[in-house]
Length: 310
Image (tube, rainbow, N blue to C red):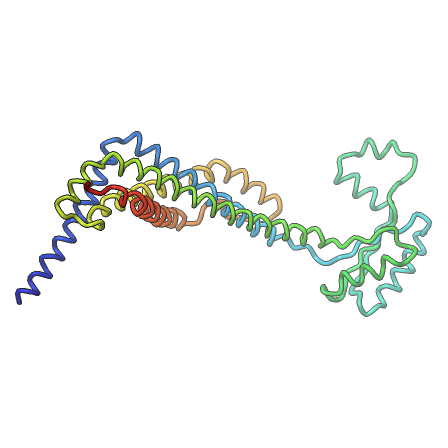
């Protein structure tokens, strides 16, 4: 019975010290609000940057995913190919099993369309002759055969150039994947920076309380007992930095979101406002808390052993 009561007393003492350490560390931070706020802002900026980049990249990926670029091959015919010859070849192409449909665009129709889209009507009117060729728009029967069909048609002597219209979307996807990797690498480096910032801050806090730590160790205080207040200090810094990061992310999207939404609407790709995910702030606070504990643990483990009673 007495052993059970002893365990309960030790448990209450352990919880009491956790509560006192959390309250004391928070009180020390609030006692110097400017310095604590600047540290939290520095952590918040470092956390917010990869969060904004990752969210912006995800929004762009969704936007590009809404763009439907059908596999279509644009055949620019040589100037020597007449309209009659182009129409005859169109019928031959439509008879091929690998071709689903072929549309013909004459050089005159192409000039009219280019004049309307480019805004260079006066320049085009000043030309002595139409510089545009006849155009055949070939839709492959199967998307996976588009590249092979393009290579086959490009070998024809009547073709000056063959362009696969979906190729640009594939390049865009590759650039998006590259950007995602860059964001992950940059995010990892910045998160390491958060740990280093907290480690340096906690190192200074440990040095400022060296005499207090020596007294605690002289009366038999364990390393865990001494470490606990500094871990809570790192936790509070991390939570504050996460809150600052969340507010910065919201502010950034509030500033650029309306313009980005209008731009996306021009492509008919989005109707909902551009902004951070609903769980962005809780995730940032949780991430800041974890990094705060990690930075504090590393700093205390590194420097606490150097402070021993002589």
